[in-house]
Image (cartoon, rainbow, N blue to C red; front, side, top):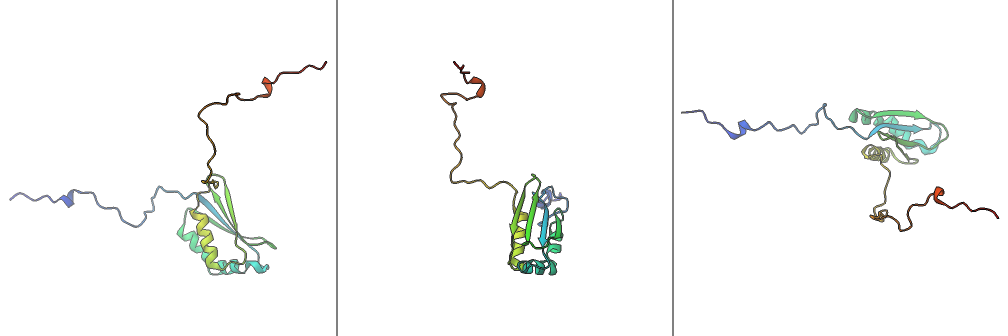
Length: 146
């Protein structure tokens, strides 16, 4: 009897559900800056956030993102995301508990860094040129003084 060929043996192996370390996806956020003050009362949640080691957890979870913790005295705490397209986004996290700060950091990490565009009223785009044409200072007639 000839050997039986099973269809499942001909199919390619299924990819694993775990993300591989050789993934081609690059996060738009390349740097997350955490700024806080040691003395200000509005920084209590940020100091707890840092004390619980949550920035270290973020750095482990997103190895392609640089996580920087900076002290800046007499200011409110800030999370700043620096993106590959050159833009930055800042979120003030004064008087927030550590879990809310973590959700704001996640918001910055998931963001694309693009400018926010209103979808209610998109800009007017015309398919025809203006009847008058394009104005230029070189087309303006020079008036001679009498």
